[in-house]
Length: 201
Image 1 (cartoon, rainbow, N blue to C red):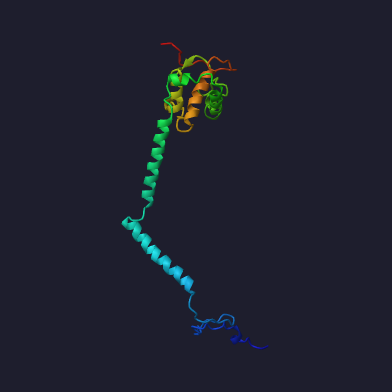
Image 2: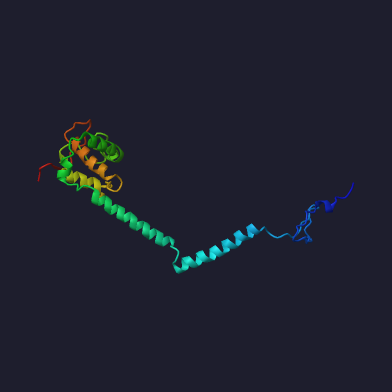
């Protein structure tokens, strides 16, 4: 059996450098010490220069830091919030009373109720863990604005969460109007009345 011809495994020498790397012989394959491609070295040197510039820029402050970006973003968010608050209606008794009987508002409130209230007050407002919403007795006031405040701020002492930051402004308003519409209905198995009657001392 003939020995492998090592010379046949040698790569062609480059025009610039034909120095053979000694000691690099893998299964008869040998290589020359040719330089790295110019484009590859250019990218390497550029990344080194850029890394030095970036680190210096972050340290000296002429490149925005993540903290600066966060600060500017929070300023923009707060400005948007203030704008939204300014554009929102003043939710008071007269505003809510003007929406009573509005079918679209009541339908929006019905959907919000199913999502946020039914688990404690039951599907038809007859009360379960929470009080009955269909009678004329109220623990925290039965005026529309009282209902809205209880929804928006919650009643932590009674375990009721605040929905003001969970639901949209329109949903909070619609929910108060919908709950008011439950007053006087007669669902099955209503919970016993709790609190004071409307107009009572």
